[in-house]
Length: 122
Picture 1 (cartoon, one colour):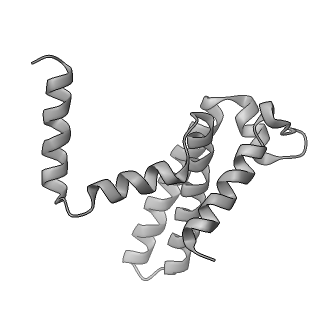
Picture 2 (cartoon, rainbow, N blue to C red; picture 1 turned 45 degrees about the vertical axis):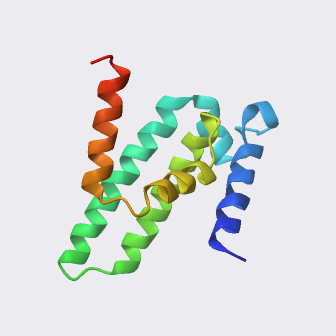
Picture 3 (cartoon, rainbow, N blue to C red; picture 1 turned 120 degrees about the vertical axis):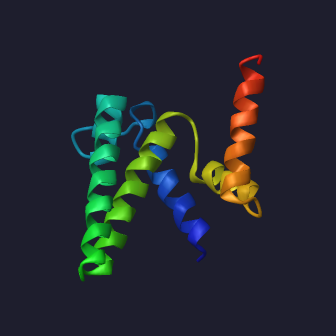
């Protein structure tokens, strides 16, 4: 099974937990976050991002790298909840990464700035 299959399977589970799809906030953590709305899952993303940073800093000082993997998994999972809420999927993110492949980070950033200026009518 490929990593994309795992992401797709997990995305399908998250989708099935949406209240509109019968997700029960009394029995599902994902359904509960989605039921509470964006403030709930966005707060979790912020918490998980902070925990990811702290785990990385710990690795810098001899900490266990598997803790960083664990925290990034939590961050990705909660980000997937946000994607589902907004009608997006991990495939959308993978496609964006593929689009950026081969562009240097500096080129990609300059392109985004130029597109933003264009959209603003400058």
